[in-house]
Image 1 (cartoon, rainbow, N blue to C red):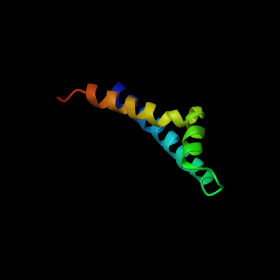
Image 2 (tube, one colour):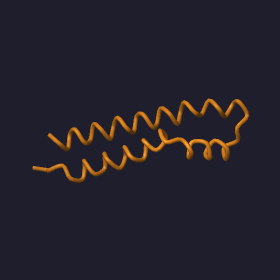
Image 3 (tube, rainbow, N blue to C red):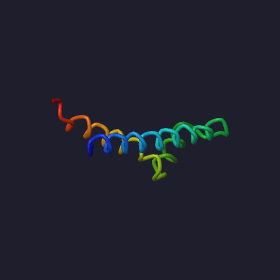
Image 4 (cartoon, rainbow, N blue to C red):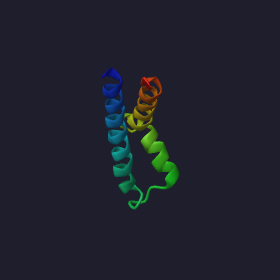
Length: 67
């Protein structure tokens, strides 16, 4: 049961980070270049939820018992 909770927690983090990154893409039509956009999302803490969530999901899937 703990691995299912860990997976769902990672999934939630991934969704939060992914939605935030997509929402910040609205700055591109406002005149930001791709380099400035990458620099901006690298400075935002909430954008790191996507890779952290993917890592948590990966750990939960690898450690889940197969029996």
